[in-house]
Length: 148
Image (cartoon, rainbow, N blue to C red; front, side, top):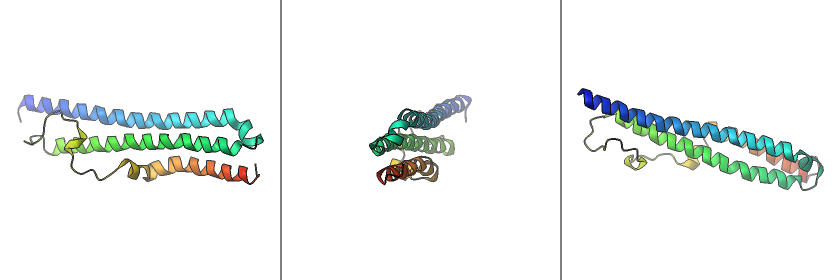
């Protein structure tokens, strides 16, 4: 492989790696924002949750707010996995004749085995968000049964 082709390959791999890093960072930020928002809603609504009869509705709203964060976090992980596949494709066959250089389009991959919905139910995603949702649902049930 000539020096120019090798340099272009390194530039392309750097570009793909920067996209992968950005997706991983976005996923990390989404989890951080979800935790911050969850903590803030609990802190500001603790009187409503504990003393008022409509505290169950407040907890239900928190669940409804948490679900889009779960989906968005899964979406970024889905995108990261796609770009990891593109990275592996470039590494394994840098001289492929049917491959367009610097093409970061996920459409170039024909094997979309995962979906955002399936990634939502991976252990690393499921137990992070589902534990909070189950805790909130337990609070809703306790509030409706007048235990709180």
